[in-house]
Image (cartoon, rainbow, N blue to C red):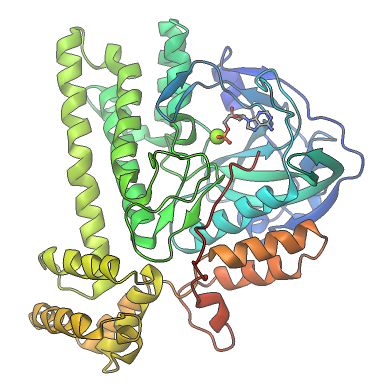
Length: 482
Ligand code: AMP
Ligand code: MG
């Protein structure tokens, strides 16, 4: 049964010291740009209970007591002890009909005590961008925060030019970040850190309480969740762009869609973010960076692992090292499904295809999708993607040899491949065009794109242009969207 919103405050009750109570700024003329009614219904909320006034924090929802959360973070490797929600508020938590507890959170709702030099605001374009990409990620089956609504504030905000302002309402399994643990550890208050760890265990990995050392088991669960998440990103060509420790969740959900984008042509060195000069967060670096971030998490938890620091470090290092195997196992299993390979197929055939794609600058998404047609007897779609199709033919012969050990019917395998190789991803040129139009008041391209991306695996007539890579004469650039 759908009802209005009723929010709880479990984070605020459990974790004083890790937030500041705060209110949203006043906005002149809040107008709903997009409301995710399907998500509202999934959360048991009557969409009519959500309006532009409450979703910009102008009026409090029942049970709401907004807070700005505190966290620290390593940004591009450098440590900032105090970041926190500079322009965001946690309104409270709600319980979905399936029992899940989720955060309802606003982004762009005005300056907070953590705002540092920022204006606390967000522009329509970047907030709709988060909406498009997070909802696309969800449809692709990738754990992510979700976008509930984007509301225009009626304000013009100063960026390179004046831009229409907006607030994003999002939901998340929680907003606990690696940086939340760093902040708590940095206060030197061991009791607070303990409360944070226990809160995180209860909320995300309750089975850890049954383990001999719940903190260690919890850490292992976070490592596992992130290894799985990173494999999922890599399998669809997603580049987060700003994998700072404050942008990595404890839940294993993707969070903070800023300069993120999907790769077109396969190249591990692909970077879109205009501020990532060294390529720290390049596509191919992402698993290593996740592991680096998880090392920062381990550092905060060492005192809970074992009484002797050396023992604690050994325990942490073992789990941290296991990230690589956990990640590889997921990635390889995913690649086998993408290529229709039998369960124990060697990874060589995958690596050979990737090398070929890289050498010939082949579109990542189109290439994988085309392989099911090849399996159904028509290799022309795949061949046409390669400037030297003979190299593909040679690879294809080896691929067929590997697949020959498979007992499943090829039609069945092709169907399974189509269920994991998307036709439609948020193509950069389409995202940009939709955001430009929306910034100028036309939401039609945005809605059309969001609709296509809700069914990424289902090829539909008339949507050919949504499957096309962009023209890549000039490198695509993304911005942090502040
Ligand atoms: P991000 O790179 O988006 O994850 O943001 C990093 C930090 O900067 C977070 O603490 C944000 O709250 C803060 N921040 C980003 N943009 C603004 C803004 N316009 N005003 C205040 N704080 C901001
Ligand atoms: Mg962030």
